Amino acid sequence: MSGRLSLNYTYIAAHLKEYIDGDKSLDVFEPEDIEKILNESKLTPNDFEILLRKLSSNFQSINIYKCARNTQIPTNSLQDAILTLKTVRKYMKLTLLDGIIDNMNQIENEMSNYTKTIQKLQSDLNLIQNQKQNCEKEIQSLKSQLKEKEREISESKEENNIRKEILSKIAGLQNSDVFEIIYNFLDNLSEKGNQKILAKACEVGFWNVKLKSMWENNVLIEASHRGNLGLVKSLIECGCDKESRSNQGGTPLIWASGHHHPDIVKYLISVGAKLENPDNYGNTPLIWASGYGHLDIVKYLISVGANKDAKGDLGNTSLIWASKCNHLEVVKYLVSIGVNKDSMDKDGKTALSFAKDQIKEYLISMVAK
Image 1: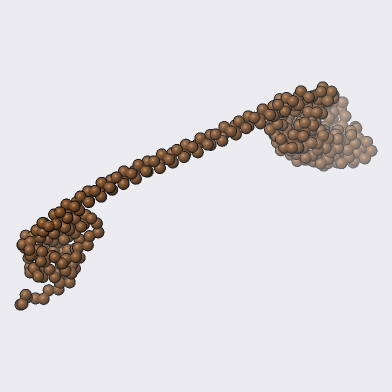
Image 2: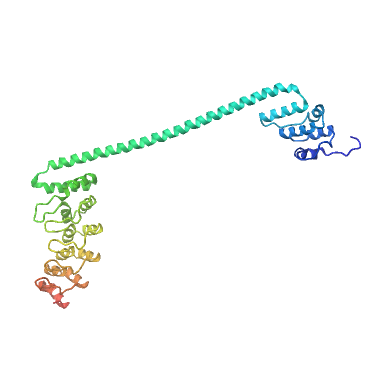
């Protein structure tokens, strides 16, 4: 190599890819130069094969052997190792590698078969796992269905027990005390919060049993009369008719208004009881409350829209009834909110006509006729 320029083998080795992939020729290098370049190069098995193929067009196998015998070729897989051995065998004419290559090819084939077997087993395992998941879902679904059926059976048994208890209670009733027995039975269920049995009892008509009196109140009306708010609520929640009537047409709201149970009045209004629903004589809840002197209920009914000048069938207004029954504070309140103080009943009488003592003096002072 005397007389030639000194080559930078490290640089050429770093750029050897340009000779492998491009059009640059390796003919410009001597065998000893190529050997030094390859000693410093980092080639993949593929690049090594391409390089030796190009060298084979100008160099004999012995020279290729000398150039490439110390080249370091990284092999990251069995395929890389086989390719490297095949390249050496082909371009260096090393037939002694044939057996090794054959064995390695066999190993590769076996590994490929093992890989396929593993993949097949993995696929089968995935299928089994999916089937297992589906089975678990199906089991869970069946458990849910079973639980639902058990709940339905339990409810059915409970309903049967309720029916038996109601039938047993009916069988034990005596005509003489039937109303009070039923009233107390329903009241007891309400106090205990046993709404299911109460609902069944209402369903068979217990709530509509009549009190033996001139009014013939049912249980809901009588509960309103007695001020039993808990029982009233329970019966309404079970679907009992809040507009039901006594023998003389009194509704639960009328009875609560007339007998001073403001909590029941407010509850009945809150659940939609009719404010102007009169009894058989045309008297509204406001007329009842006024006639009995319940000022707080009168004020409440007015506040929720009651007709202050409503008349009964005989022409009696709230003011006439309050005056007739001597309830001064109710009279004063009704006059203060602008009721017609000169309204007449069918006999032509006004509130002043029935007034006595202080009420008479008050109405005269208000220029009532």
